[in-house]
Length: 435
Image 1 (tube, rainbow, N blue to C red):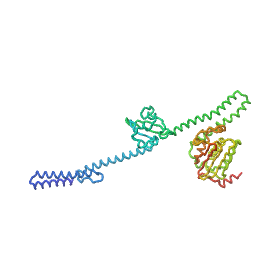
Image 2: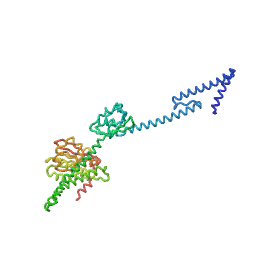
Image 3: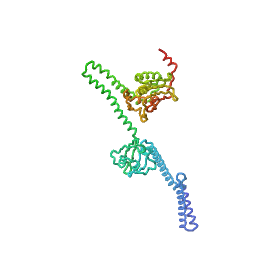
Image 4: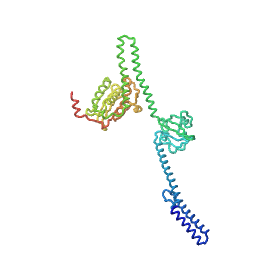
């Protein structure tokens, strides 16, 4: 028994004795003592009730017995609130994660009502906050999607046009959560479909490009099987052109694969490139390809060079200049310039060809993409040149840009970062002047 318990007991005995002596009755003394105990307990209970309204900020009742009860309640409430904070933290983290998922999702009840969705689903399906509680069948009106929502689609996956943008393709996947709710996962597969189409086109185009020279070679070989020596000597030179065409195609494919699979070039591997000298070599080759059918002029700053990969830059510049020759009609002018522009070194090729329609401009750098122009087909090309140019310029911090107008020709140009510019030093001037 504690000291406080002894004091309370003595107080009750004293009250009982005092009332019994004053009333000359033991019974009234006992009643008074019991009343004192009840009154004290009532006061402590009232304090406990007031404390329970704010149990984590107010002190508990002074009575040790009630304080034990208050302490236990305090501990229970505190642990409950701590669990609530953790649960709230986990719920908020889960909400942030669900919103960060790039694919869309929507929780749909068995009746078709939308229970919840993330921002990606809102963007892809064209939903808004007011659509919660609406029937998804009235918002996404597509027969295959409706069959999926109703569970009538066996594959549980369908492909539809995006309700908000019919140029985009969406994949909808149905995942059963429980008997009353279904999760609809939405994924934008436009780029995936485009990549698959490009791969199929690539295989078809390679097969087509190889079939023509192979057919020529096989035809000549069959013709020479039973031919005499003079006929064979006549046929052999004719095999050179299709073989070179196949070799050029294979070389371009290997170059393009290397550029696409490689990252940015190592700074240590870069060197000074005398662009003017490179362009003079390419211009001479282009005049040979033209055979005098075009007037090709070159204006190049002889002291302006850049740091880069010489072989790659040669390939990019050569592709742009030879393309101008192939696509320009006889008698047209082709102007090539290399100079220090406002934003850095600039290379441009301007022709007076037939021009390019706007719908073709964004696809020019795709593999084997060609505009159906008969003269250009006659003069060859693998169809990979501009794709190579795109990747070479990307590796050198530049981008190919095109300005064109039907019937008036085209301008192909690129600008290199000013940081890549390197003006030729006196030492290089001396080296160039030495025999």
